[in-house]
Image (cartoon, rainbow, N blue to C red; front, top):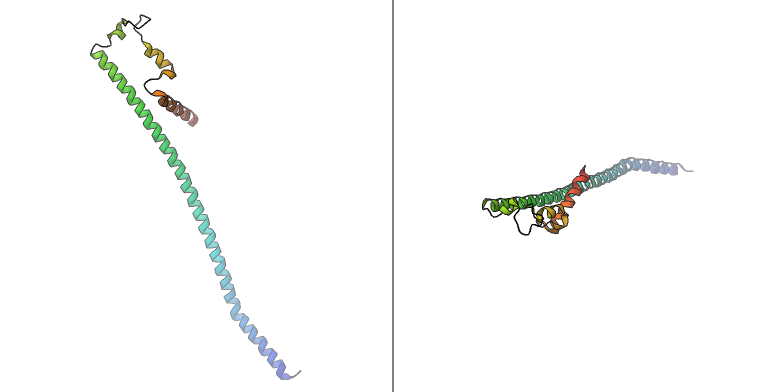
Length: 150
């Protein structure tokens, strides 16, 4: 082999080594940059998923709170209706229009003791005239929820 050929081969090898010396760090930097981007994407996905889960949890909690508020409003309305009914009965007694309840002299009483059908209606949930069927169903639902909390 000629000396010129050996020198050419040696120069090519040196150029390749110098080229690799410059290319390798750049390739490493690009690889590290891709890994950082992948990690950032993974962290973003995890953070977004955590926030979605938290939002779902708060949404469910808000729905439960709204239901409880509706139940409380219904119970308050029922209590107001009962208070109005008692106020009306008190007014009847004040005006002397309900003396038959006190003396038992009502013609339609049937038992002669001054009791009327309201006692029987109060004991029978199917005759709950003050609330209607929806009120009785709401009351049963409220009682069921209160028992399930225990």
